[in-house]
Length: 317
Image (cartoon, rainbow, N blue to C red; front, top):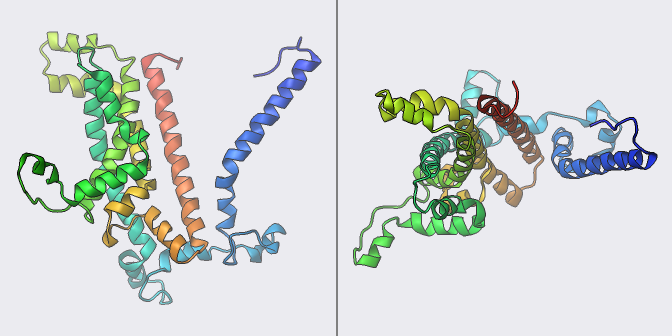
């Protein structure tokens, strides 16, 4: 906001100082993220800026680490890059396999979290819902409880989901959910549900429930009312919650270390393995890609938030 013309020199000085402080805070927060991007183009296997990079010498920059994301783990990385080579990439490349697992787990966990979170938010938004605050606190507890505690609890429970039945004298074995895709998807969905509940609940704050009563008085069935009236109005909040759930699943590493097995290697877990086994700038390349994807998703969330505000009449169109 511009200063008024009658501002005193002291006020102008403070205004300039305030801008400098804000810029420094922004730089402090963004520098660790932005510095990864140029380092991912380093031609040398180092995590520091080389002399050639500092002097903007083209030979100091390379795409070798992005190429390594495709060739690492292949059976014939030096073969001609034809259809067989790309088939080898798709089936054998370690990072590509991790990306496929991340997308598969993220997609299905997002669907599950969005459905369950939206239904929970609809119930919690009703004034006649008993113990709303207690239920809300329980449902969003995965956001509050340290993830390591949640992951350990999920590990012991998923190792034998029927173990609570032993408390009533039933010794039932119903299989393991650890080291399975179903277990990983359920774990990630549990971590994503709180984000869906919060965003959808915030959208329902401005929802006029008289619209539902009017639809019911005109003979509309509850399913018709939901899909024709409620869903179009809360859709931006639902999509925003789904995006947050997907990002949570895509970036999650602690739960996958406990729940996942060798076949459920996701990108964060592969990065963790790479840091433990061999430090390679290829990790910086993956981090750069994740930063770009995160920026795109967060931009979509902001666009949907503004659209939701316009639909609710909070801000002018």
